[in-house]
Every structure is written in structure tokens, then in C-alpha cells.
Amino acid sequence: MVILVTGAAGFIGYHVSKALMDRGDRVIGIDNLNDYYDVALKRARLDNLAADGGDFSFHEVDIADRDALFALVESNTGITHIIHLAAQAGVRYSLIDPYSYVRTNVDGYLNLLEASRKVEGLEHFVYASSSSVYGANEKLPFSIEDRTDRPLSLYAATKKSSEMMAHCYSHLYRLPLTGLRFFTVYGPWGRPDMAYFGFTQKILAGEPIDVFNNGDMRRDFTYIDDIVDGVINCLGTPPVDDGTPPCRVYNIGNNQTEGLMDMIGLIEDALGQKAEINMMGMQAGDFKETFADITETERDFNFSPKTRLADGIPRFIDWYRDFYSI
Ligand SMILES: NC(=O)c1ccc[n+]([C@@H]2O[C@H](COP(=O)([O-])OP(=O)(O)OC[C@H]3O[C@@H](n4cnc5c(N)ncnc54)[C@H](O)[C@@H]3O)[C@@H](O)[C@H]2O)c1
Picture 1 (spheres, rainbow, N blue to C red):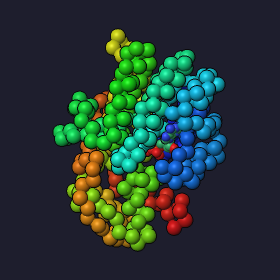
Picture 2: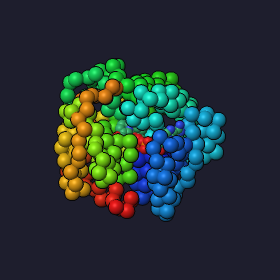
Picture 3: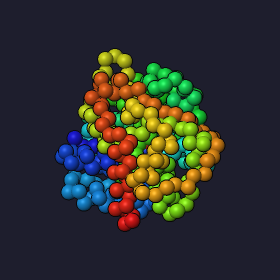
Picture 4: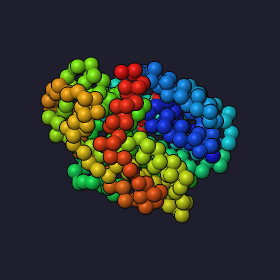
């Protein structure tokens, strides 16, 4: 397989690219290396990919730059699959810089859909959606049949728009498209803007941590290795064009909902240090609980998450200490 991976310098893109190369695939990675979070971490991921010994090429391309993206795709003949992970991620930052979300997650995504029409023999285009599309949905666990037309943040709205644009392109051009709604992905090489990462940084620095909604939050935390298995299994099973648009959406979560305070306790145990906690109210755009119903994901591509939060958090802490030499 020859796979174009967007967001290859990102958390999930790095792990997915590595796993694809490890099984002998050719990976063409693109990323614009923006400074939403520490660029040195993105570069370190890329250095690791380059040193991996696999078939990897990297191109610093902004997917919102249509000409650059089209030129890249046209000059790389033989692409068989696309894994689109590049995005402006994060719920909270979408209240600060909403335009960056539309630029990458809507305009950039459209560019990628248009570029994919030029790829002869494209077998499957898999893209990242998010659990945040469930927005004001209160029914648990979240099923792919549930309403997703009430987003609580612009981030969620752009992710929902990806799913709708996918349906449209699949209908019009018969592109095989699968959207994966990721649920709070964590693990080594993770994202510094996410709570578990920030808590670790602050606890080690002896600084207090802000805990929103007075700690009364629950998340379906999904370990990165399980996500990688899910993405790769999905990639190999494109939707069939049976007259309806070959277009699907799946939940990809751990199928367990865990308390935020329990997660903090696991970090404290792994660090051997107690957190000083600032209890705060609910943040705008945020939601209290996520919980993935993965019935279809298990059925259609054997998705079977194996990692408990109690095992995954210590692995993240081990990586953190090693990477930052602590
Ligand atoms: N990590 C999670 O918990 C989670 C949850 C739900 C959905 N997602 C989605 O999964 C995908 C990957 O997330 P991640 O956690 O790896 O995030 P990440 O921020 O680590 O990775 C995204 C990468 O995309 C790149 N990028 C951003 N804008 C770009 C642009 N215009 N052109 C080219 N590259 C650009 C960034 O530089 C970054 O390296 C994203 O689409 C995200 O929205 C992640």
C-alpha cells in the first residue's frame, strides 16, 4: 500500500505512520508543523519516523494551500490510500481562534477531498472525526445512530461538517470514505494541550492544576495503540459501493467511561506526587461525559480495545520522563 498520511507529525499521525511502515507500507507524510503546541515535539516525532528504516517521505505542506497540496498529490503517483489526520484540534482553543478551525478543518479538508479525486485507483480515504460531534447528546453510550446536529463548539461543528462533506463527495464521485470518531486518545508522544499531559507537566513543576466542573467529568479514554489498530484495520476494509454512497462513520473509543478524578489519581500514583487542585466551573464549549458504543466498529473491522486507563497512564508517564529526561 502507498498511504498519504496528513498530520504525520501529529500525535496520532506519528503512531499510525510508524505502524504502517513497520508492516512494510510506503508512507508519504504531510504536515504544516504549526505552533499550536511545541513544534520541537512534532519535529522529534518526524525524526523518529525518518530513523525508523521504513519507506517514509515527509513534505511540509499546508492542506489549506490548495496549489501546494494538489502539486504534492499529482507528483506522488501510486497513492492507494489516504489517512487524513491533519486538523486544528482542541475544543477550548476553538473559542480563541475560530478561523483556524474553518481554515484547516473545512477549507483544508475540502482541498483534500478535491485532491483525492485526482488519485487514480484510490481504494480508501479514512479521516478523523471526533466524539465531540455528539455535542448536546445526553444518551449514553454514544451510538452512531444518535443525533449529532447540536455541536457545542466550533471544533465539533467543523468535525461534523467533515462527515457531511464526506457523504456528499461519496455520493457525487463514489469516493470510499470512512470517518472515525476518536474518543480522548492518550499515550506516549501525546498532545501537550490535552488534560492528562498538562496535569503531568504541572504536577512535576509543583504547580496547581485547574480541574473543570469540580472534577465531575467522565471520558472514554482510548489508548493510542488501540487507536492505531483500529485505524489500520479500518483502512483495509473500505466501504462497498452497493448503490448507496460508499461512506461510513464509526465510533473508535475504549467503551469504558472513567472519572476525571480517577485519571488524576492514576497520574499521581505513576508520578509518586500529589496534585494541588484548583476546582473550577464548567468551561464553555465543553461536555460532561463521553462514552463510545463500538458495536459497529467491533463488527465491521474487529476493533477490540485492550488497554485499561490504569495501564495506559503509567506508560505515558514512563515516556514523559524519558523524553523530557526527568
Ligand atoms: N487526540 C484526540 O484525543 C482526538 C480526539 C478526537 C479527534 N481527534 C482528531 O484526530 C486527528 C489527529 O489528532 P492528534 O491528536 O494527532 O492531533 P495533533 O494536533 O497532534 O495532530 C494534527 C497535526 O496536523 C497538523 N496540521 C494542522 N493544521 C494543518 C494544516 N493546515 N496543514 C497541514 N497540517 C496541519 C498539525 O501540525 C499536527 O501535527 C485530528 O483530526 C483530531 O481532530 C483527536
